[in-house]
Picture (cartoon, rainbow, N blue to C red):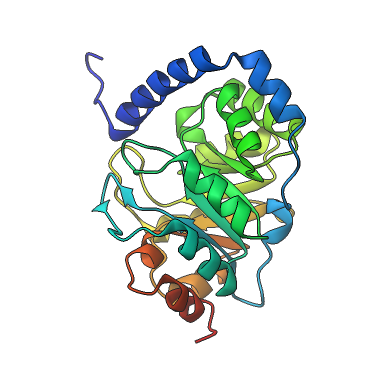
Length: 266
């Protein structure tokens, strides 16, 4: 890696490759693909992302920790959180399954799927078709694909596999070039993450500029740095159909009440 900075994203992906190798040794791809192909479909993630007036739909994220913030929620009762956030008005749930840096597990996703009627997206660092099959058999309605991790060819390959398994894809971009790449590959749900995945710094003004670059007809999602109702409404006015909110909920004593406030219900 001479001449190249070793980033947090590099560290995460290195660990994910180790996990993937171990998983394939337990169950070969042909077997997991067959299970995924025959797994039942969850509720539509894309259909759930519709804003109400100026207020974007909220994808509430179950997140115990992050590389930038460390442990966000010590008392991480994921089952209770899932049920309460659905009741508070979440349109979908995002569940971290990355173990080493976000302290997630597949079990969190499976439990959430079993307890709520709204769609659940697997939030992880996906670069292989095997991971998409995992998401499907765990009950996810959608997966995240991050442009910063993938070439256009890799993104298109994984996107088509997910669609073939009847999964929606939240395609995440961090700059204008990535947005153009995702749109050229046919992405129909594009998320703008104002968090730089190499430094993990955020720039909320950047997200608003990038949302304007996404044409009508594409579902637009604002990600990261949503801390208040004003932030949420501003994202809606900038064009966001939905917002993914994690830390701003998980860091509060009562995440469900905080979500109600964000949605203007409390």
